[in-house]
Image (cartoon, rainbow, N blue to C red; front, side, top):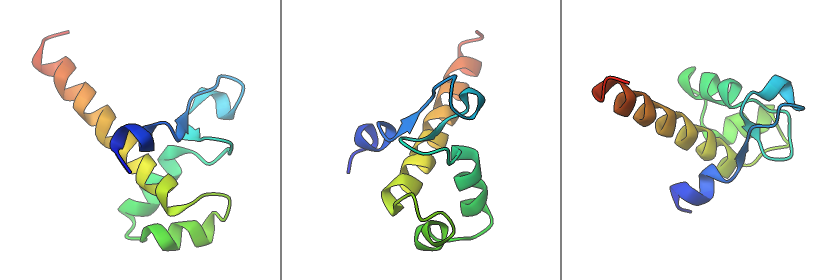
Length: 80
């Protein structure tokens, strides 16, 4: 699955979770999944804790976090 396909799994809707990025069709926040990965959980273990998502959704959260980091670096490097 490409990063573009993974990123399509992440949605931002002002009517869901106060507009925080979530896995499409759920209220599972990207930040929750990134925290779980940072704590050392594998994608499979994260899915065990959040059965409404898939391992691809966990990878999508990681891809989204990487995309945000790239955006921040781009912004900082261009002085905007």
